[in-house]
Image 1 (cartoon, rainbow, N blue to C red):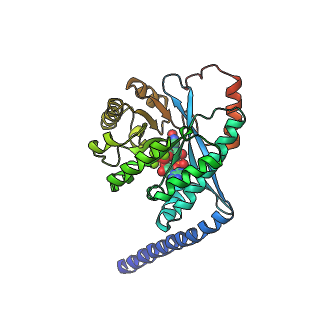
Image 2: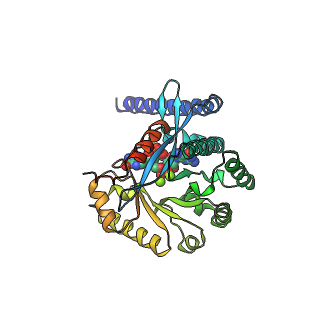
Image 3: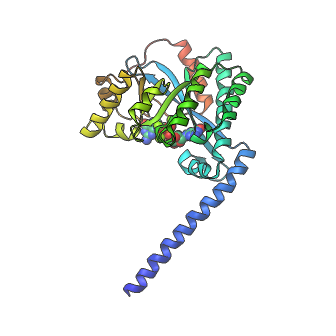
Length: 288
Ligand code: C2E
Ligand code: MG
Ligand code: MG
Ligand code: MG
C-alpha cells in the first residue's frame, strides 16, 4: 500500500513537472509571437522624495497582455526570455516605448521626472547597444538625463570589470545609473566606488521586515549610510506601510517607491495624474 502511495506521489509530481515544462516551452514560443503582435506594454510606478513626498519620477515595468491569460507579470515570462536571449529584444522594445512616451509627455508640457528603465545584463553586454541607445535618443528627440538605467547588483558582480567599463560609457552618454536590488548581490565595496552611479535601490526584501526585524533595520541603515558616504541618492522600493515609511524617514533615506504611495499603472492613467498634478501644486498629504 505504502509502495502504491509512493508511486502515485511520483506520478503526481512527474505530471506536475511535465505540465510546468510544457508551459515553459509554450510560453517560450509564444514570446516570439507576442513580439510580432505587439503584446508587451509598459506600466509606470511613481517614485517620491521621502521628505516632501513630491513626485520625482517613475520606474518603467514591462507587462505582457496575453490573449488568453490576461496581464502577465515579469516573473512569469522574463526568466524564460533571459534563457532564450529574447530578453534583449523585449528589453529594447521597452526602451523604445519609454522614450516615445516620455517625448509625448514633454510635448504635452507634462513633467514625468526621471524614468528608470531596468536593463538585463545581456542588454549592456555589447558595443552596438551603446550606439543603438544613442540612435534611439536622437530618433525620439529625448535627452539622456531624462532616464536612469538600472542594473541589478547581481549582474554587476558577474563581470565587474566589464560592467564598470560599460557603466562609464553609459554615464558619458548622459544617462543616470542605478544599482537595483542592492544588498542582495554581495557587491565589492572597492568596485562600488569606481562605478559612476547616481542611485542605489534598497531591495524590497529588506523593506519587508521593517520596522520590526532588527537585521533588516541594520542592513537598511547600513545601505543608506553607505550611499550617503559615496554621494549617492538612496531609494527604498516596496514600501507598503506607513510604519516602513516612518522608519525610512528616521534613517534619512532620500526616496521611496511602493504600493503605499502608488502602484504601477498604464501610461494613460499616468498622463491623467500628471495633468492633475500640473493644476494642483499643493504638497501631498501623508498616507496613514
Ligand atoms: P524591480 O526592478 O526590482 O522592480 C520592482 C518590482 O517590485 C516591480 O515588480 C514592482 O511592481 C514591485 N513593487 C513595487 N512596489 C511594491 C510594493 O510595495 N509591494 C510589492 N509586493 N511589490 C512592489 P514587477 O513589475 O513584477 O517586476 C519584477 C522585476 O522584473 C523587476 O524588479 C525587474 O527586475 C524585472 N523587470 C521589469 N520590467 C523589466 C524590463 O523592462 N526589462 C528588464 N530587463 N527587467 C524588467
Ligand atoms: Mg528595477
Ligand atoms: Mg529592485
Ligand atoms: Mg527585483
